[in-house]
Length: 473
Image (cartoon, rainbow, N blue to C red; front, side, top):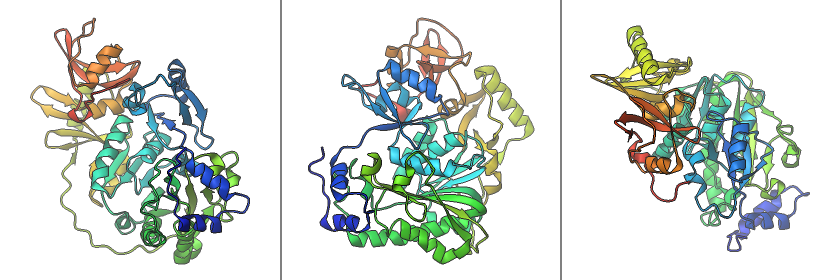
């Protein structure tokens, strides 16, 4: 129990005032004081749910399905497991993502009856749990613009995207208010998981409410109204957006959605979410939103609304001044040379949804669907870096291997546990078998990087920022 949890009186009064009568304050406070159940989401870009369950069985991990996400599970591990979940081999190779169960709901809502997304926007995306969930739902096809305003969080977002083998994302680094003017009516699907006062996160963070005040809620509401308007302008007519928060008050939830109707009238329809999963109606509001108090599903507090845009809106006008885009599409000749080399050295191919772009000596694979948006906005990065050219050909990149390679690749070298630990510590490994040239390195049938045979050892190709010490798997 979190007995030291801080629940301000004004907050409890606010909850009491707006909580539906069939729910009790006693249950609410008790749920807030219970630590959160650990949950994970299987990354289907790397392995199927069935394959992952098999691994979990071997490790004596107990998985209990999350009702609103067919790849989500609450996880219980044996007490003898002293390794942090984030330092397990399965996590480091991107087979799963540690994600709070409630936060899987917005993407489930966005994907429902919407399985041919071509152009999506995740407007506030770090650390990347929902971005990677959406990319997996899109099967790495189409394009997904993931935006993050905070500089410090862009790095984390980037590394999570790479670890999970996502290849259809373009990262931007802006205040989300810019999208409505810069990319009007561009996206068929938008996720706005808005910055909020975090009232639903107390179970994860007992100090979450220390900076809470009724005034701060009002201030955050102003930002949320701006963001939801911007998102609505950026949405194509006929498109859908999901607005979500991890907070519980009406000012940041229902009122923000109603503000959209005040602004855009009949262009806005709320799509009811009562049949999103079994028992969803327990959290349903009269508008069809899901307002999740922590005691209903023993989760974090959360809010999810699904909104359809019925007709065009007039976006704010902006003056664009963009520098020259530093990449150029590869010529047919260049593309053929890259493809041939990739095939002959590593037996790999680029997905047909990607194409090569060149900057100086760098070769990148961009999602094809991003092409119309190039020159419309500045991007932090697009797709993934495939290679750097040098005199003798190409130096393939770790992130490309994580996006493209599978463990059945003929060049693979499978390490044992001790060797894999050495690998993650940035050291060369000496397997008891030999090979030659570049090799895709795997552990327990999952790709963990790219190395090169030098005599009887594999030279370590792990990027410095991924080198780990300490207690691994």
